[in-house]
Amino acid sequence: AAGLKPDRKDGTEPHLGTNVLSNAPGGKIPVEYLEAQRLLSANPESYSEKRQRILSNMKSLREEIDAADSKEVANIFETSLNREMEALDKLNRDEQAERGDDDDDDEGVEMKA
Image 1 (cartoon, rainbow, N blue to C red):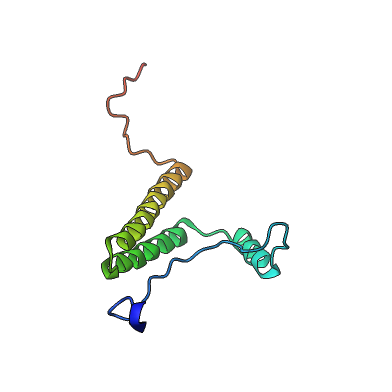
Image 2 (cartoon, rainbow, N blue to C red):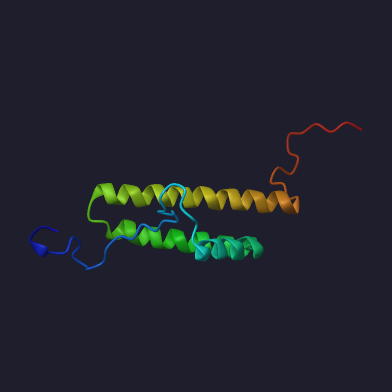
């Protein structure tokens, strides 16, 4: 920041987490990364755990939107929030499909005897 002043008055800085490897092309993938991926795939989350993680992400994103010091930063977090809401909708649809739940109740469907 100009004049060595913090960019934000509350002293916090926005954190845009990533899961991107920064290896050179053709470089080896770190063992730690491979192990983390193995653990994630070996222990799939339940629908409740996924929902809890998504809701936690949404809460964090809303806090970042409220703390944003510019419209551009707020827009970035709002885009991420929209993606989390889409993920939650998809999760709910997937769970309903797996359980065989239908929201339609067959209204408006003509049944033949």
